[in-house]
Length: 339
Image (cartoon, rainbow, N blue to C red; front, top):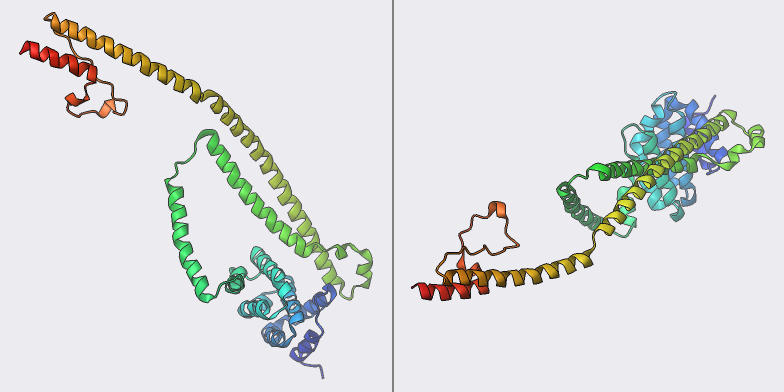
């Protein structure tokens, strides 16, 4: 009588390791028994919880390979893992080896980028645990989350108040946004490359020694895909960086031109000379007005200069106290004589 697949799976999990051959061999077996995926997934979870801490990461590697390689044949494994993986990932983060954290975070990023589990967001599965390990308890994390909301709102408000750039500055802004997007795409391609482009896959002798040629072929195909994606993302980023550099050089040229045109020292000297000349002109005008009045004529006083007023909207009544001292002295003498 053939052994039950669930019992056989438990025995196979007992010897599971993080080597490529161990992961892919058992992954191929799981895909073959995909119709029992829900039962096998529960057995996987039970064995994971019993496994020693140094072997727990291998269980996640197995789940990752099974979920990705089985999708073309059906959704049995992705559906089965979707409900238990969030708790399993947190379990490995909390109970596994301390050095496995970055590897687990990279796994969740790859799952999210490739949409292995549909609309699920694997990175959110570990957020609470990661935040807690970064030095905050649950209450502290809640405080951080609460305080982040007003900060985000303030940031949006500040951006909303800023006027939109125009002309060449608008062009520079657009290309900087493209650069940020290209940088994110290249970073994601690098993560997939680091996960899939292993040097041992290029060893031709390993093909002859492989116990599962199909799994080896899939791994090499993932290698090629990772290399192509990284190359394409790198080329796209390089083109955008060239455009950014060109526009930044143009912006720097405008800065240098503007600095050359803004000669604050000479402008200050011109202002001092203008004030000196205006003072002399004011005295001459006051003397002329006084002589006209003394001779029995009528002369209009010039309006005082107000450097802060807006001529287009200046509806204030005239205020005699605004008259400069030199005008007021002449006016008082004239009023006494005319009275």
